[in-house]
Image (cartoon, rainbow over all chains, first blue to last red; front, side):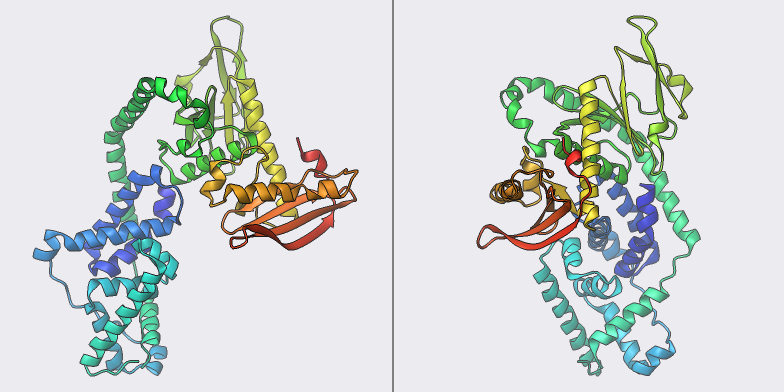
Length: 163
Length: 328
């Protein structure tokens, strides 16, 4: 169990932070993820990678939290912080464009944002995402396409023309 | 602007920006362990109840299961009962141990429970009792790198009906010693695992399984193949374990026949009997044998689902290592 926590705590916590956009809540969810993993370890047959298995628990816990009464009634969602710039980014992207992209991604519907986080932020393969979400690889490609299209549409609404 | 490029840049930025300080992570880790400990305490009763239920079910259904006893010994899926181990890596090690014993030694572990030796060795990670149809085997798992073969058993037969034993070269919990036995205890060690049983035949089976597994692994390694990517096709046990990996009986029978070809081609045959290895993640089989003419041969086949036949993919040959002596 110690090994499991040592190896995966950082990435599970990071994923939860990205998914729920609240570090305190992410902390609670991360603890829950490892407690659930501990409970179910004897039944884990190793059909998938441990990391994928933990991600699956994390995604489900985040979903559960978002459906909870406390999330819908008590918590507010803070405006996302727009990250600063590096020189390299400035070369390829105008400041306003960058700000728009960051804000729009964070305001995407959860199902789309989840896909982009798993694919781009976590850099999981389509097969891994399929395992995490319990869907087919084909469905992953479809959902990713829809997420990108939605993002484009929202950016276009803001007057930014993305291809 | 390209959205794909934008998202990749954003991801890189987010990855860099995410800073979880070590102190904070340590705190989360401690909270997790504190809660795990809490659950362990309340869970121990639950585990005992589960074990008790298993025993009760076994007793009450004995009349029914005996009818299917012969079938159940072949049924790999029956071994998939949950094991009360605390560590994921121990769990994985146990799974591969069961597979190894079944494939190489024909030992079908049907039941696992805590061993009475649990807590005796201070350095041990886990001590479990494995049972096949009629025999019992204690397995003590030590951390990686531990040399279990250094541990020696010291038995005292001076008083009949009161045979005791203890161990040398290991850190032991004094309060648990000496241990009692009804007869001699046979010991075998492999790397960081210690096996103990009162059945000499069982000890021999386990020893044989481990030694054969090492020899077969060496065969694969000599052709630069990773042993863990393959499973040895045992001649007489084409059971559920291969089916679980997606292999059909038809394919197994065909490759078993194909593998014997060199034996009949090169009469009088002086080499080793061919060994068949099935890939775990793709429809490939490797046949390795000594051709009796000073060379080791490796033949790679691929299963073609459309034609339901094995197709030869590749042949390799190396100066011989003596595989013939390695067979039973």
